[in-house]
Image 1 (cartoon, helix red, strand yellow):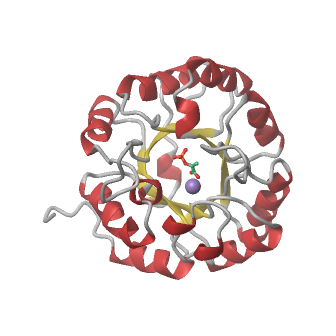
Image 2 (cartoon, protein in one colour):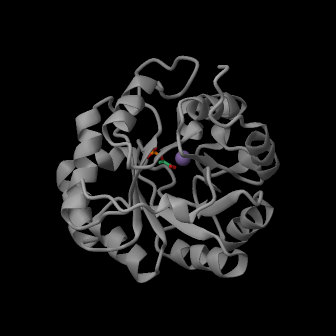
Length: 257
Ligand code: PEP
Ligand code: MN
């Protein structure tokens, strides 16, 4: 793939944080105001592909205004999930800096292709989460589809793989798959999403550390000022204060674990 280095523009390692879902402008600004200074990119989902109908599916396009306010008021780069070509167009219109494709979209080649075509030639950064199932080629295929449309600032996010029976974690990490990805495409930054792997805020730190032991380039961590009241993924979100302590305790490329 033809990849442009973008991660060196950020302080390493790269930390992305913010709520699973945008809930209100006040919620977004509150979280933004409390995030530790190591966080350079603010995340919030505004279109949420939920497993079951009648769940909260995101505030929709109005959230783009709130993201912009976070950027203007606090200087973060902003990122949100895009799950179809229309989302892609809207996100470009609102100048969202970084777009990500979620695990439920990565599994669908036609949908990824449509998104890739809607983003054709953009110099925005596009991050691709692994598909829900442990299929390395499907993950790589999604990146290739984007690259095929001239998108060269790419990154990958490891968020673990769905299983029928929950083990210690919500999603099985199956680290070997991410490490195979890293070996094959060392030029594509690889981030870890310890929140969706862990599924439990008390386990986020250990998953984050594990990924750093493997030499990942950064983290995307779901962060909420009142996690128990979050409208989605309440159990796995950490407070900004907890995130600060996770970041400060991280041993970078530790050899001893
Ligand atoms: C999310 O980041 O909130 C999300 C829905 O993640 P995933 O696509 O990894 O399930
Ligand atoms: Mn989530």
